[in-house]
Image: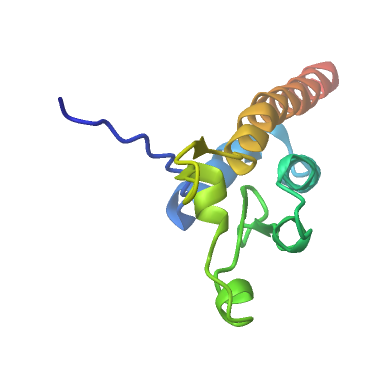
Length: 145
């Protein structure tokens, strides 16, 4: 039986962001700034959650969870910089914690996901916040006309 792999593709291209910004102009000039603030807050919440969920044996891994905002601050990503580990002579072990590994002695499968759950919990909140902000903008614009 073939194993299936789950891939989480969270790439946001510059082209798609330009199209999004063009579409947002219909909601008024402040809509992009509103969404940038929402994106920053959402990313920070996801980062905090991932840090809370991460294994804390040494605190090193949890302290290295990064939040990266896109150039236009309309998308966020949480993760690690491999150089933070390899530069200290460490293996890049977050991938094993997130996806799982077999314990060398007991053979038990151990998994400590923290990035994917943080993303899964925060994404619906982010989408709801964006929708609410756009609804507010639309109702404000209708009231003016």
